[in-house]
Image (tube, rainbow, N blue to C red):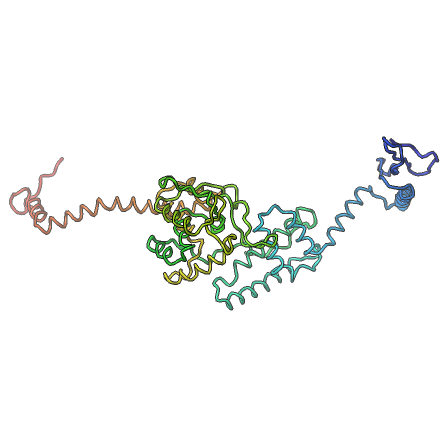
Length: 436
């Protein structure tokens, strides 16, 4: 309920704001008609603040400096926002994104280590294209030096790509929020990245050798990954209830989570949702893997339906570094120093494609939501089939060639040629009668 102030004002109006239930005055509304002939109002907690606002508005009108209050408020809000540093905006931007815990962790670590030390204190609106270029050039040199010192391939190109990707995402977010007109992150080629590692497809012999060399409590991981294509984190997140092995001919592993390699709420490798909706899937297990898994469950897995299949120290989630350290040891013993854990997944999908899996089937096995990635394996399968077809076609010709050589060896074909050249047994030099 409102009540108008009794005293006549020369500019604007003041109204009491009352509670409908108690009838007490809860505030004041100040209103006036501006030069645009529109009504403008604002609510205040006390009368003096309301009168001060009206007096300030009239002063702006008298000095011909007046603009609509809402326009001034919006400009002031944007000016305040543009006054924040890049570090302040980056924190707000990451907090507002819908990210998986592992992705959020990667963004935060990348910003802290690679971006903020050089760019964090610069006001967001003052960040220039030259600032970004200088930062990128310096970062590339640092990463290359670190890679050489650690004897790593690629000169840190992957880390540089990741850092620039995070920076670009934060600045694009600023553009979306009208804090910047355009993003200053425009370094040519910075968002193009060709992986240094060439994926390896294991032969059956190599797979079995790796299986035999891994420690007993990790050995079953090799054939399971090499035949189902589960990701590293998906394997470490498996619980007993996710394996259905009663019928070896129809055995299935269910992917219902993934273990991330980061610290969340003070704990390492907290299990979260699968990478994407498509990653939540059921994958068939070849029958030969079933007894290997059954023996592993009996000897190494935790008891109960919720027990981990691959168990870490003190019953926790198996840490990625434990698997990786053992993997580095055994891969050298088989002469594959550049073999990655992820190559087990690559092996599974490649062999599936070679076996004739369709694009849809490959996407279902891999948990891919984008067919572009699965198409790479489909092409591998297509190539295998093309070669198989070519060999079948070639077999017809090579069979005939073998028969011709056999006839020559026995003199049969030579005799036939001499008969034909003499005109079916006629005098030497006699030719065949041309057919009209």
